[in-house]
Image (cartoon, rainbow, N blue to C red; front, side, top):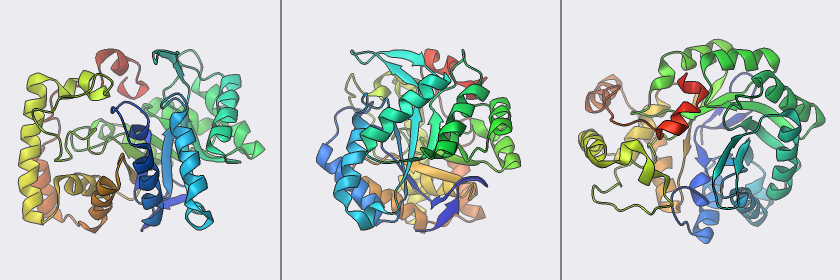
Length: 334
């Protein structure tokens, strides 16, 4: 597995990371045994960065990863690096209550995460969304104190705009910004990516398959469970969905000529954008993981890239990436 630096301040990580959210939340039921086997397979494949959030399944995801690491054995476990998001507030019914970036809360969240994961440090720690009531300098400053104490190794950001990136980086060294980036979510190219590159900060890109929409596996007549995030996502609704799947059909033609799957082409496109961009693959099964890892063997030359962007031009998708209320909470969209 090829490795890349996670910015000038971060660790070296594998060129692909594993996003573990779907093993616990937001995409309907997942198989616990298969999830753990998928984490093991990812480590066997050379993937190092495992991404989670303390609010994914109200702690379930962290406990799942902790179990996977304990059962992996010392050799597999040795290379694992944990990226943890915090701050999301939940209620007993699964509802959302905003985000908490107060310094005391930051340290409280970290204490619980360390225990659930069963580790003595977190490799990259970040607030999931900026708390509008707390200056980013205070939140990042609290993480910096955790770094100084040895509980955290590196500081990351998530879904932040260019101005916030600059303020955070002026407070403490930042390794990466985690943000959605794919063929149909290219908003970071306007200013965020320019800023991170100027400052030597990497991008960990989630949603590279747009939550399965551009994976080549999403059927037009698929019925989603009410607990599935996509049942409420604008891109998966009615005419928007049919239009977006037309784009996938066009991408499939490019993939067929290249001898790859649609998912592999979509991941390879993100990989082609630079070594400072690490795609997080949200695979929940070993089969999907193996397909994603195969993208590392797909090389896109200039003609291929032109064909990919001809099939899915910038701005071609219909529907926002989140419902309106969630879009309004994104610092990255301001």
